[in-house]
Length: 369
Image 1: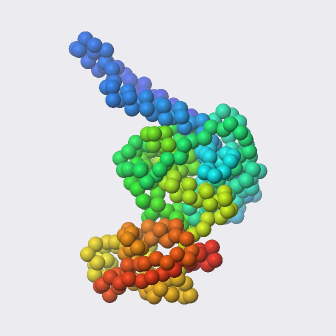
Image 2: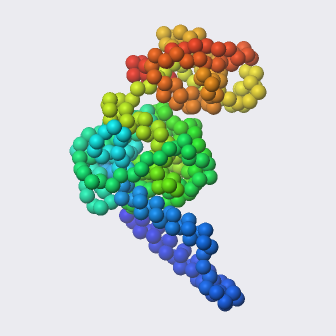
Image 3: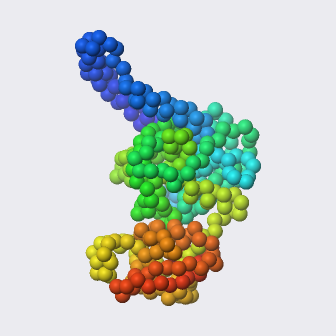
């Protein structure tokens, strides 16, 4: 709270200083033109659009508080309070209301240790909690009626350069709205901890800070296209590089969690190189950096049965070109176990084709990717 107050005071001081400089200039321009100085119509229209979207989305955005057991490494016995955000939604084929948020906000907590605070002041404990650590997605069921819900959009349509709004509770300041653009898509080379394996983030420069996790990223139609998850920062605060889970991935995971209690994923059984650079690609005879480099093949897995080898570079699955290791992991994870697929592999400076039957990730050890 002290930090928030200090920021507010600094902001007020800055506003007053800028106002002292701009106001005389505005008066001078008005005097020269003989007309009141106003904003261009396009700016007013954009401002009105932001206001409309915020008014539509804010009622569905919630604050999430979770009381977690003390961390063993801290040496303290006091529980840890985790703050985050969430968004109320409906899930296709299901009745009731659900909150989408991040797994890291509520992990290691029971339903009665989680408090959901609505924009209208109502508070609830979820009646059921589902979580998927591999994608950092969690779903909380809320037993209440007539709740405002957000509209879920299509993150495949989120283009670089498009305006977006981020909504959440940074530093505990609920119902906060910031704006920016989509800075990049399909960001997978982001380190977020050992349990998070499925990564295809939208990158944005909209201000996201601690406490924003789980809140919605919204497009200019007022539809949720992502769930805000992480920031790239040296000091833990916003630096203009933030990441959101695409809502299409969230919808797939949330639907499976609510309907079956778990997420079905495919796997091949190999370890991929975390770094595959241009110099290495040239050594292997590739004309450009592409694909995923195989570092290890585990015995008695679909990858071993298909004849994959160490130093193979997987270039395609069926007709889909592989961008990098995380792209490959995401594609394989989305395939149903038992499906037969064709791989195009770069081996000994030539492409070759292999067929592989996708395995069931839930039946293997986490060591096999």
